[in-house]
Image 1: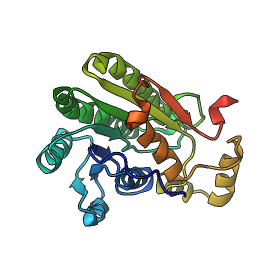
Image 2 (image 1 turned 45 degrees about the vertical axis):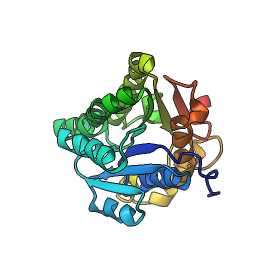
Image 3 (image 1 turned 60 degrees about the vertical axis):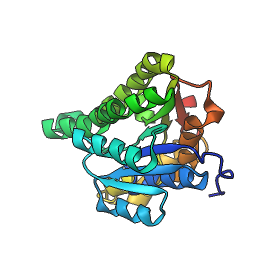
Length: 253
């Protein structure tokens, strides 16, 4: 993918969840390329590999646990002295008919995908309020906008995120804090490739998925990361409460 614009976020400190790979890792890379410093959070120990860059601090932990959110906020404040941006990206995926979805699977999705956003937002927002502003960018999905078979549980979590974002935008606007969400279509990351790998012909399924996007392909993570960084940046200073599809035209049909 083309390089991001020249560094212009040198004073920005961002917390990014689900940062070890895929979209989250791309977001960290895009922020760093523009000069921002990042606290990268993930349950995967691999997130520590991002610390080779001294502008990144890694926090390993389960995003559904309050202690992980508190640790991320503490790391941002102790290492960088501020929090300007929160990107709630961590999520789990499930492709399964509702009748075959267990209670444990339902609860697991709600805990990782929705509870984590509540915990991280609750932990980070006071520091933004104290500074007089900031930006939250949440990652929802086209599955939170339109109904998709075998994604009832997953789609429910992503729909909750969309409304959470709109309510957050209204509640925190008086504090100079913007809240937006992106709703990606299918992205070429391990997040989608892992469940597809369990199917008889993953590449054929992926080609079929690509064909449902009017642009005829799925997204690369850097393309979606650029949209996230835009919404977090001063270039989006008058944008709040938006759920932005980054989906190759999927939801335009």
